[in-house]
Image (cartoon, rainbow, N blue to C red; front, side, top):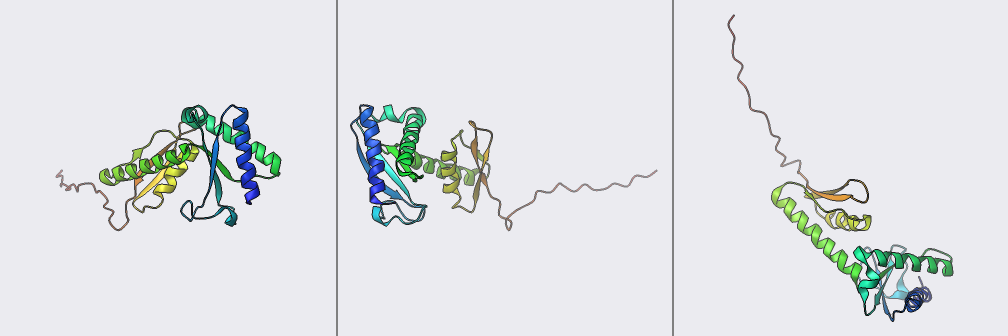
Length: 188
Protein backbone atom coordinates (compact mmCIF):
# COMPACT_ATOMS: atom_id res chain seq x y z
CA UNK A 1 0.00 0.00 0.00
CA UNK A 2 1.55 3.25 -1.09
CA UNK A 3 1.41 6.66 0.55
CA UNK A 4 -0.79 7.70 -2.38
CA UNK A 5 -3.41 5.08 -1.43
CA UNK A 6 -3.20 6.05 2.25
CA UNK A 7 -3.78 9.70 1.37
CA UNK A 8 -6.69 8.77 -0.91
CA UNK A 9 -8.38 6.87 1.93
CA UNK A 10 -7.84 9.76 4.36
CA UNK A 11 -9.20 12.27 1.81
CA UNK A 12 -12.23 10.06 1.15
CA UNK A 13 -13.06 9.95 4.87
CA UNK A 14 -12.53 13.68 5.36
CA UNK A 15 -14.61 14.51 2.26
CA UNK A 16 -17.51 12.28 3.34
CA UNK A 17 -17.51 13.72 6.85
CA UNK A 18 -17.31 17.26 5.48
CA UNK A 19 -20.42 16.59 3.39
CA UNK A 20 -22.11 15.41 6.59
CA UNK A 21 -21.19 18.68 8.31
CA UNK A 22 -18.26 17.47 10.43
CA UNK A 23 -14.80 18.96 10.67
CA UNK A 24 -12.29 16.18 11.18
CA UNK A 25 -8.61 15.38 11.54
CA UNK A 26 -7.29 11.97 10.56
CA UNK A 27 -4.29 10.01 11.83
CA UNK A 28 -3.00 6.78 10.32
CA UNK A 29 -0.99 3.86 11.61
CA UNK A 30 -0.15 0.35 10.48
CA UNK A 31 -1.43 -2.62 12.43
CA UNK A 32 0.56 -5.81 12.06
CA UNK A 33 -0.08 -9.31 13.33
CA UNK A 34 3.49 -9.86 14.45
CA UNK A 35 4.82 -6.41 15.35
CA UNK A 36 3.65 -3.93 17.98
CA UNK A 37 1.61 -1.00 16.72
CA UNK A 38 3.39 2.14 15.49
CA UNK A 39 6.64 0.31 14.68
CA UNK A 40 6.46 0.44 10.91
CA UNK A 41 6.45 3.48 8.65
CA UNK A 42 3.75 3.80 6.00
CA UNK A 43 6.22 3.39 3.15
CA UNK A 44 7.36 -0.03 4.42
CA UNK A 45 4.03 -1.85 4.11
CA UNK A 46 4.84 -5.05 2.26
CA UNK A 47 2.88 -7.82 3.92
CA UNK A 48 -0.79 -8.08 2.98
CA UNK A 49 -1.59 -9.02 6.58
CA UNK A 50 -0.73 -5.47 7.59
CA UNK A 51 -3.79 -3.28 7.92
CA UNK A 52 -4.04 0.49 7.78
CA UNK A 53 -5.92 2.05 10.69
CA UNK A 54 -7.34 5.54 10.19
CA UNK A 55 -8.44 7.29 13.37
CA UNK A 56 -10.76 10.26 12.93
CA UNK A 57 -10.92 12.98 15.58
CA UNK A 58 -14.12 15.03 15.68
CA UNK A 59 -15.96 17.22 18.17
CA UNK A 60 -18.98 14.95 18.80
CA UNK A 61 -17.77 11.37 18.35
CA UNK A 62 -20.82 9.67 19.91
CA UNK A 63 -23.01 10.74 16.99
CA UNK A 64 -20.76 8.99 14.46
CA UNK A 65 -20.05 5.97 16.64
CA UNK A 66 -23.69 5.19 17.42
CA UNK A 67 -25.02 2.50 19.70
CA UNK A 68 -22.54 -0.39 19.96
CA UNK A 69 -20.57 1.16 17.08
CA UNK A 70 -23.33 0.56 14.51
CA UNK A 71 -23.06 4.01 12.87
CA UNK A 72 -19.27 3.71 12.74
CA UNK A 73 -19.59 0.32 11.07
CA UNK A 74 -21.90 1.83 8.43
CA UNK A 75 -19.54 4.76 7.87
CA UNK A 76 -16.63 2.35 7.42
CA UNK A 77 -18.68 0.38 4.88
CA UNK A 78 -19.43 3.53 2.85
CA UNK A 79 -15.76 4.54 2.85
CA UNK A 80 -14.73 1.03 1.73
CA UNK A 81 -17.17 1.19 -1.18
CA UNK A 82 -15.89 4.60 -2.28
CA UNK A 83 -12.22 3.59 -2.00
CA UNK A 84 -12.80 0.34 -3.91
CA UNK A 85 -14.56 2.30 -6.67
CA UNK A 86 -11.69 4.82 -6.91
CA UNK A 87 -8.82 2.30 -6.74
CA UNK A 88 -10.44 -0.69 -8.39
CA UNK A 89 -9.47 -3.21 -5.73
CA UNK A 90 -10.10 -4.05 -2.08
CA UNK A 91 -7.70 -2.35 0.32
CA UNK A 92 -7.49 -3.52 3.96
CA UNK A 93 -8.12 -0.65 6.38
CA UNK A 94 -10.04 0.17 9.53
CA UNK A 95 -11.88 3.40 10.23
CA UNK A 96 -12.01 4.39 13.90
CA UNK A 97 -13.50 7.43 15.61
CA UNK A 98 -11.67 8.89 18.60
CA UNK A 99 -10.06 5.48 19.28
CA UNK A 100 -13.45 3.84 19.97
CA UNK A 101 -12.47 0.51 18.40
CA UNK A 102 -9.05 0.53 20.04
CA UNK A 103 -10.60 1.11 23.48
CA UNK A 104 -13.20 -1.61 22.79
CA UNK A 105 -10.45 -4.09 21.86
CA UNK A 106 -8.54 -3.23 25.04
CA UNK A 107 -11.71 -3.75 27.08
CA UNK A 108 -12.35 -7.13 25.43
CA UNK A 109 -8.78 -8.26 26.07
CA UNK A 110 -9.18 -7.35 29.76
CA UNK A 111 -12.53 -9.17 29.82
CA UNK A 112 -10.85 -12.26 28.34
CA UNK A 113 -8.06 -12.12 30.94
CA UNK A 114 -10.60 -11.77 33.74
CA UNK A 115 -12.65 -14.69 32.44
CA UNK A 116 -9.50 -16.84 32.23
CA UNK A 117 -8.62 -15.94 35.83
CA UNK A 118 -12.11 -16.90 37.03
CA UNK A 119 -11.95 -20.20 35.13
CA UNK A 120 -8.53 -21.03 36.60
CA UNK A 121 -9.73 -20.27 40.11
CA UNK A 122 -13.01 -22.19 39.90
CA UNK A 123 -12.06 -24.94 37.40
CA UNK A 124 -15.52 -24.33 35.89
CA UNK A 125 -16.50 -22.69 32.62
CA UNK A 126 -17.52 -19.03 32.22
CA UNK A 127 -20.08 -17.88 29.65
CA UNK A 128 -19.61 -14.34 28.32
CA UNK A 129 -22.40 -12.12 27.00
CA UNK A 130 -23.41 -12.34 23.34
CA UNK A 131 -20.94 -10.64 20.99
CA UNK A 132 -20.34 -9.89 17.34
CA UNK A 133 -17.96 -12.09 15.36
CA UNK A 134 -15.27 -9.41 15.53
CA UNK A 135 -15.55 -9.23 19.33
CA UNK A 136 -15.53 -13.02 19.74
CA UNK A 137 -12.41 -13.27 17.57
CA UNK A 138 -10.58 -10.89 19.93
CA UNK A 139 -11.52 -13.07 22.92
CA UNK A 140 -10.49 -16.30 21.14
CA UNK A 141 -7.19 -14.77 19.99
CA UNK A 142 -6.33 -13.36 23.41
CA UNK A 143 -6.99 -16.64 25.22
CA UNK A 144 -5.29 -18.84 22.61
CA UNK A 145 -1.98 -17.83 24.26
CA UNK A 146 -2.79 -19.86 27.36
CA UNK A 147 -2.40 -23.61 27.72
CA UNK A 148 -4.73 -24.05 30.67
CA UNK A 149 -7.91 -22.54 29.16
CA UNK A 150 -9.68 -22.79 25.82
CA UNK A 151 -12.67 -21.12 24.19
CA UNK A 152 -15.72 -22.13 22.18
CA UNK A 153 -18.46 -20.12 20.52
CA UNK A 154 -21.99 -21.33 21.21
CA UNK A 155 -25.43 -20.29 20.01
CA UNK A 156 -26.83 -18.66 16.91
CA UNK A 157 -26.41 -15.09 15.68
CA UNK A 158 -27.14 -12.54 17.08
CA UNK A 159 -26.94 -14.31 20.45
CA UNK A 160 -23.67 -16.16 19.87
CA UNK A 161 -21.46 -16.26 22.99
CA UNK A 162 -17.95 -17.26 23.97
CA UNK A 163 -17.52 -19.95 26.59
CA UNK A 164 -14.17 -20.06 28.38
CA UNK A 165 -13.31 -23.50 29.76
CA UNK A 166 -10.59 -25.00 31.92
CA UNK A 167 -8.35 -27.41 30.04
CA UNK A 168 -7.66 -30.52 32.09
CA UNK A 169 -4.07 -31.65 31.66
CA UNK A 170 -3.74 -35.35 30.86
CA UNK A 171 -0.91 -35.91 33.36
CA UNK A 172 -2.87 -34.42 36.25
CA UNK A 173 -6.27 -35.71 35.24
CA UNK A 174 -8.04 -37.59 38.00
CA UNK A 175 -10.93 -39.71 36.94
CA UNK A 176 -13.65 -39.95 39.47
CA UNK A 177 -14.49 -43.55 40.17
CA UNK A 178 -17.56 -45.04 41.66
CA UNK A 179 -17.21 -46.55 45.13
CA UNK A 180 -16.72 -50.29 45.13
CA UNK A 181 -19.60 -52.33 46.33
CA UNK A 182 -18.87 -55.57 48.15
CA UNK A 183 -20.66 -58.51 46.73
CA UNK A 184 -22.58 -60.40 49.32
CA UNK A 185 -23.14 -64.09 49.13
CA UNK A 186 -26.72 -65.00 49.09
CA UNK A 187 -27.58 -68.41 50.52
CA UNK A 188 -30.47 -70.18 49.02
